[in-house]
Length: 336
Image (cartoon, rainbow, N blue to C red):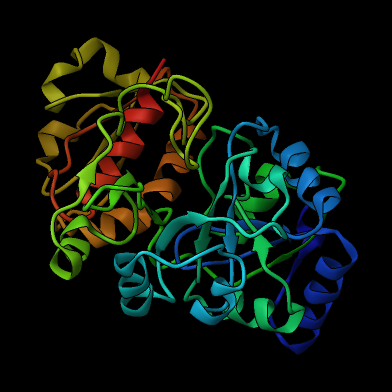
């Protein structure tokens, strides 16, 4: 049944997806970051189906996707902060989400009752085509069960949500090229620096080159906000496989007698001896490329989750560039 939901993003597929979204159904669609579970962001009944299909708590706000800056301006109240406008002009369409004062047309369900809305213009051609054909802003969190591994292929969406009654279609745009959710920035009133709420597919270094130093959320990868969430991906346990995951410094930390029940997620060059006798081994990037590791992270976590090991152990990734976002995902995936 789930496989029959998948369609090619040709003219017929795009027309069908757009019609379903206008009717209030859910559509799985590719973005450059991960696959999203899309609904008409202006229709509270359609948005409610997202929460139901994912098992998502209502206190966790959604990101609204639009073709570009012109469409986003209609969903914001008041003047844009100068830094927000500059970043949108530089990095949209792309993996950057901006949190701004919401227009009354955005249902409170989308923003979890907060006066701000998270906005993004995706760069994936299929997402852009659907947004333009539907003529609607689309709320579209990752198309998976809440708290689990984000999907980066249409097949992963079908595996996660193929049984959801409201999911009417999945457009297959191939693997997501970035493979990590968007970077999220807020612009607190009275503060001179944008606030990094979630590390993601646009590196901090690229953003800081454009607008100067960011303020960093001290909760990144550590603990939950005291109440609710200011943005998606803020909870301590997230992106998690069903198999327990633990971060380690070196394969030698796993006793030889335990390796036949342990799956290893590596990064960088790996000696044959270090990989020996593990139940399963996957390498994010044998050449230590952070973009490659980001693009493969969720796919390989899903592969190792299917290995039926007793636990997954993950080797370190550098805390630079996309490594900040990769480590954030691994920390949250390992949270018990």
